[in-house]
Image 1: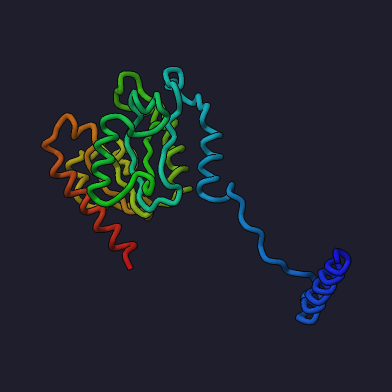
Image 2: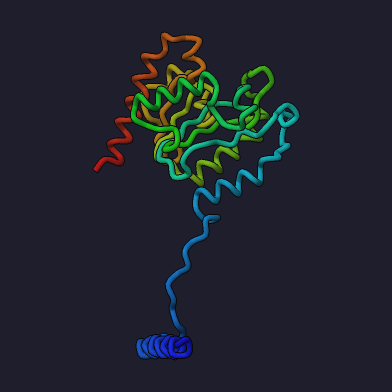
Length: 227
């Protein structure tokens, strides 16, 4: 029985090769092999993370517990970018997991997004001491990592959370008040600016403006992807 199966397979192969020759091909064309996971956005992000997880490009590595890379869907259409990890993020290795992160989750839920269907990251991957603002030299060393993440994920919309991430991405010194409320062009990607959740915890009066901003984001998203 096994011998008969081998003969049948041999006959099928001969017929296939003869067909290829009759069509004018001098070699057989087989279907393309499935792409490996390493060439998918997920695989690319994983390999990129492994390549920078021990980064020592600036002095911040001396203070970190772990490099905070990013989290969410590698195929996300919407990407949220903050400025830098805080204490809880440094301990857990994930962005926005402290009180500000809990508020961000509520904001996402209010506009019908889940954390696992967007992507969340920061300009800096390591926590600055005492949660101070990032220094220019730290941004210079770490921003290329964020740009690589954007290149891999290819989001359609970016939401800059806070003044610093907005100014870094848009290369401007304009205030958050001047930047929010409308979309900007970021290398062909729509970019919206709103308040950082940590600022909302300190200044609840900004929640109304933030709600306006994220509603604008949702409306733009629905316009792009609703059929």
